[in-house]
Amino acid sequence: MSNITNKPDITFSLPAISSDRVNAAAVAKVNKHLPELAEKTRAFDRQNSQTTLALMTLTMMTGHSPYRVMRQIMAEVENRKMALAEAQVSHAELLAKIEELKNKDDPVSIAKFRQNSFALDMMEAKVNGAFKDIATMIDAYENIKAKNGIDDWDEEAFEAEEKKHHVRRGFELMYRNLLETGRAATATIEYTAQYGVHPQIAIKECSIYLKGVSDAIDKGIVLHSNHLEDFLDEMAEKYKVCVDATAERLFGKADFTNTDYMMKLGARK
Image (cartoon, rainbow, N blue to C red; front, side, top):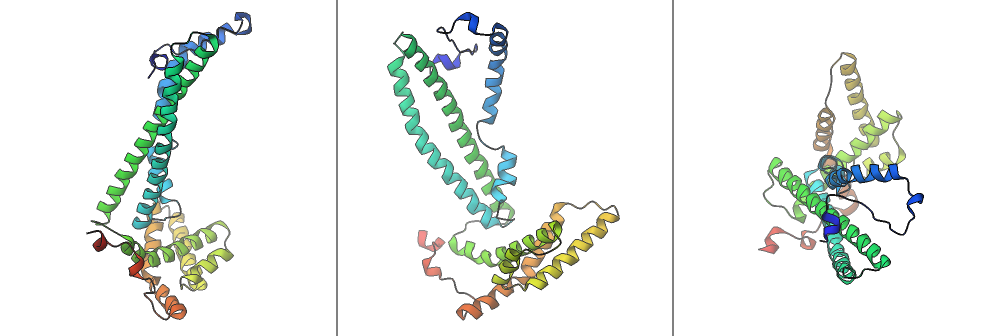
């Protein structure tokens, strides 16, 4: 990388601008503090922190389903792999431009050299951020497998958990509806029914839970959100059998998915 971007005194030389057009105090302030800001910026070379990525991005629309979270991890990693593949082309193009400009001494070429050197520095920081994101998600992937006793998994294992996930999601949405507005949204009523849970049963279960939590809070008990997650897990286990009855009504059998269409562990050996 050019030493333009590596030198500690980070400035933006603008020789074509008359000195009386530039505020000297502002220039002095920038020259004094910009190196620190540039250095600290490297800590934010990606869109999200590790904490936000792990606790928000990976659980968005996935609940606490380990298979859903692992699938989300794979999707996020794929996005960053594509970005890295595109970045390597842009990186090579910038290097070529810098090489072409480095021996030119006219003002335009010098300015373009600085511009491309700065762009290269920023791109390399973003590439580093992408690698850090991928490493963070690999950590999350390994932790989820260890936490849930998953040695290896495939599409068949993922499908086996889908019924439970959707029942859990239905109760989660119902709880949110009742908490926010005191009534079930039409979409939530439809969602729970699609997976075999009678909407009024879901409303009743969530109403009982809401009252129990309110009573606990009134008594000064501080509950963790894990309390809610445990309730949703309980509902998923209790009502996942409803999906089978719905499948039998629609397709004549509970196990309607066809494993012949799935990628299975045995097929990879």
